[in-house]
Image (cartoon, rainbow, N blue to C red; front, side, top):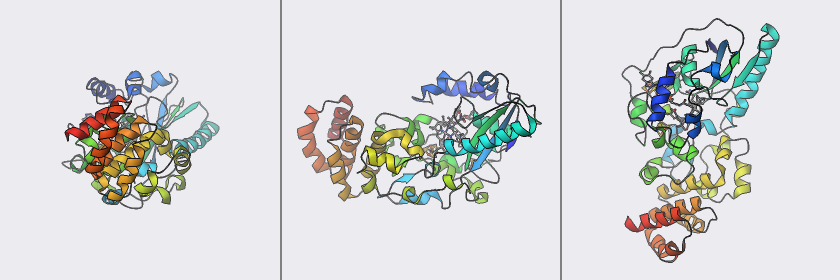
Length: 353
Ligand code: B12
Ligand code: SF4
Ligand code: SF4
């Protein structure tokens, strides 16, 4: 926990504007819609006098890169293997904020990615860590594994010193990115990031990224896990954030059979629930297409009849990768009668490749 002032992220506003102007936010229109407020906490709440930044350690028990070496299983990013951090951290922040008001007075508001606030530059200004070349905040004591949250208060608190950059000549995170999502150090093109492609992106995943995604079915930790500062990381102690056994490396064969109710039951209280069954099944089918497991071709075949075009489209690709002959036979009867233009485009893509 560290303290900074409400003007600490002001200069990041220009960088945010440049990022948006380049279109790096893709379809995250909410980033553009709130761009003027994001670097300016006073526009979010005019009474704010100090910002208390919190970092919550969610360090994994094992290196998450091990899960990406098991192609018949899905890799869910570390941050999403436990309960939704928004809920967990907000509860803790509220308790802290209540204590603050009771002991020192003033008024408070708590945010954990729930308001248009640039949490990373505020965290660096407060001294929690620095924005590494992968653009996330790295802390000397926790490596890449910190969630961030902010408490705005009307109290004028003494500010802590900012943290400085300790990346030096390292570029391990940039080299580790499977989709080359960094046009240059400290700059991320979200449209190429697997986290964006598997979570925020609502449509079919562009072909150029599908193979590189491998078995990552929700988010990505490749750049975070590559950071040498993780050698100082310790396992997170917040029980509700800890990885659930069922979400560590679930078999694709089970995930692909989840209907809507089973999806919601498995991912109750998990951030994964937010993307819904169709987007999740799309991601699982991309992983199935990359699995090399011929036995999973039957699942792709079955989902060619799914009610959701998003699922049918991904099923075409998965079947085409695992069993091109079966896909060709299906194309002959399905392509011409497919009602959805996006799925028809997938059949055409299959025919061309
Ligand atoms: C939009 C968003 C995303 C987008 C875009 C990510 C991004 N880098 O912007 C997507 C969907 C891709 C994403 C992915 C992830 N996210 Co996210 N995301 C956010 C969100 C909502 C806003 C971030 C933002 O303002 N982006 C706008 C751009 C302009 O910011 P930026 O990349 O940081 O740009 C800065 C740098 O480029 C820097 N810069 C530019 N040039 C230069 C040059 C130099 C020399 C320097 C020093 C700096 C510098 O200045 C810019 C402004 O500060 C925040 C929550 C919040 N409210 O802040 C969470 C947040 C950043 N995400 C978080 C997490 C955990 C993730 C993932 C790890 C999840 C996962 N495992 O899949 C990945 C990591 C991907 C990555 N490498 O960044 C955490 C990060 C915690 C931390 N320790 O930093 C946050 C803070 C949420 C939280 N409350 O904990 N995310
Ligand atoms: S999260 Fe994955 S895809 Fe996104 S920038 Fe990091 S390594 Fe690249
Ligand atoms: S991997 Fe290296 S360059 Fe990337 S954030 Fe960590 S120290 Fe910085």
